[in-house]
Image (cartoon, rainbow, N blue to C red; front, side, top):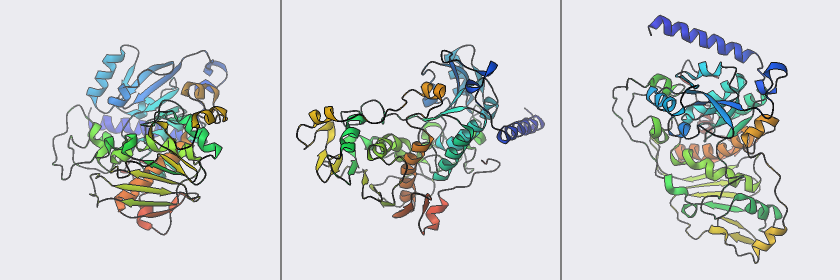
Length: 423
């Protein structure tokens, strides 16, 4: 494609998406007449980013795949070969978002794309299934919440332990833990310790490499598009695809990669879905400006005294997972509270949650893990990442969502995007 054709294509996409942003687009499944999708009809979806995670979620919840997108043509070809006929491939997600026949967009790119793509998908009238972490920065999360609410999109963050499956290392789903905590039998405030006892440190040492030499960009990869809103850096294979987790520009190491899996259920257990900690204390070595390094300990404190401790080095091998003034719960759901199992049987269940995203899309009721509570648990991740990067303790205003008297930390809330990318 020559330079003029590329320029014309970019102008077309820019003008088309500007027009989308200027009006409120109602998803086709909530329209009357020919746009209506009956509850018995199949929902349609598209996937943006078909590396390992995107290819692993081709089929789910009765949806029909119509389109896939990736900036690496080898990823795209593998996926198209796998799904067969009837699925269209794209290398530019903006072209995919122009399709009116797509209900749900699954964003399975590196995290530095999540916020921007989610916002544009909402503006295009799509419902959104987003991989974790929800956004790379706190500011991007706030923007996603605003745009999803404004355009009436349904949003699902792809971590599920708050509502199903056995939670890492604890030998139980979250539901009975929630019943115990809500009953008050443990007392208040509570301390939750997430450490090696729950398997958290299996990606703890996910770090990047320093001083990467520039290497030729593979022909199949549009590296400039892969970078997108991230700062321009010379290409090296250690920076892209599954290696992106080791660099601040795209993610936040093991904490960014796995943190929301572990922290979101804790936030739910503590009843903190609408707030954030007021204090973050950190023990970590000095970090490289580009490559993520490891850390030793992060401690979050809420206004009511509740604490979450991330014990990266597994110092507290014998610590209770949940500890209150009146009792403790350990790994494999062991407890020092007599007859806990019998007590749980007498306790009321937590409030019901929508556990299938297709149900959320059809009923227009929020999913169990949506843009609101998802942003708050992603904020836990990003608060920890900022504290690690800066190497100091931080005070945070959970209502204004800004750091208190810390200009350096506040600069990391809203980080600039590389031109021409913008919200």
